[in-house]
View 1 (cartoon, rainbow, N blue to C red):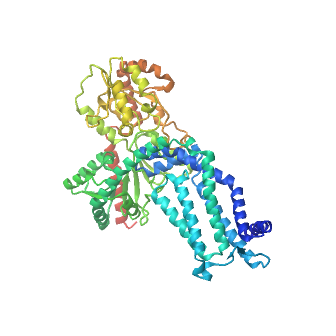
View 2 (cartoon, rainbow, N blue to C red):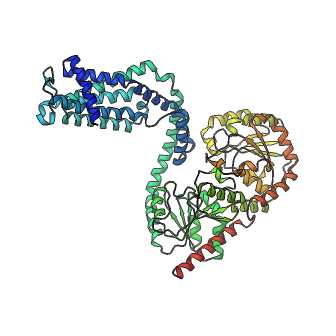
View 3 (cartoon, rainbow, N blue to C red):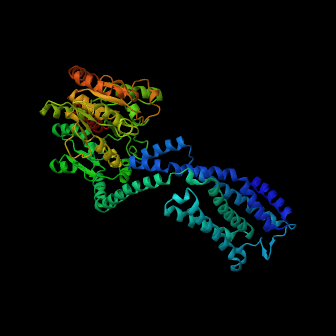
Length: 633
């Protein structure tokens, strides 16, 4: 810092020698600093324009992944990297300005101590400090604060980035800047306050010059920005109402359940469910445990409307607790059970941690998919689990290879299988199925960028609409909600004759009754193929890869390996073959049925008894833990 004082002091001395007036010297010094820092100002200004330019994309990310904070952060970071936006760039001028201010303070003190320098600026002695002189100089901090206020007003109105900030951010920044200026103006010499005033006013002038030269409207699509902002605001307003309702109705209930959970000692088994929809992954195991053991199942859910609360009323061996996401963090840190079973990955990687009070809690991860974990989930998502229930041999292979590549300790891998498919298949086989006189084709895309709807739906429909098939397009609910206008366009163009665009999901799910499924990378493909043994036409849209390092593991993801075994796959430049390929798959259904049935036994453990295998592991592991406690181990 002493070097900075020395250098700035020499520059200030040069300015004084040139002007022979210390006030004019400070104004000249301030002007020169703005000239020298102009390249930095230009860079940060263009960086701000980049931010506003990509703001519609950021808003769409927030809409698409609403409520998924980790996913939004990841996708936003990718977008920043792709568009070369630097989030911290806007802080650089402020940091430089503060360093300059400290340097000016040192230079001014040196000037005050130098008898050869006249600190007068007209009738004002620039060496005086208002706090040491009295209220007679109170105008100095007031003028400094006023200049900061003018700068904030200009930035809020004309700075391309600041003008898009919320009122809270705008006025928060204004209060901070004016308050800092008042403080500085009171405790530093008037010369330093003069520098601060000049710097603020020149910054205003520089802002309007940059706006005039660069013209942000040439770079930013404000119409698209406004549209995306309104869509996000609508979604957030719905979320706000829900949050307010949740707070008033369920906060007391959450506190009560939190206390009730920790009032129970010697808890052996805890299940955690993120929402009501996750019970289906535990269902078979829980039913087996309830029927064959006396174990009390403590079931934590972050959904206040989870159906587990109805089950609790019917079975005394179930104790259900509603714990929201925030309070869940502390609950998990204080976990005192022998075993915790969950489908939520990334234990320890983000906000949910292993128990801080017990190091012998066994954390069990239950799969909610048959496909590749290595490609379809984040890197390290299962590193901190003790036990993983694997759906098939491919998941065992991936986990073992991951442990080798990254030098991780081996986990217990239970060859459990996939209970959800067992249940769906059992229900499917128990129900009657009419043979479709007119073959039914279901198009069910995934929910990801560049899915079938985004890239090629109309090409597929154009290829099939004149064929003697009943075609049902069943978009993901999020797609329907966010692309209402496009869905109406599709209906007007295709929703007649043999094509149905299904946007009302209250009707029966047609998935299992279709003779052929057309999809991209949707997880529905596993349930459809391994339940009905019917073939699938896969469209090779861009893959959704959650783990950018998935290729470090020398195993072919099942999502890729089985595409041409469960049916056929077509690249986007092969869509002219859609009609011929559909005819082939439907015509060879019997062959595919036998092939898919064989693949079921090859790639899924314990078909028909997955839930029992998983439950028996839980029972055996808990018996070992209880025996160790009884033996004082």
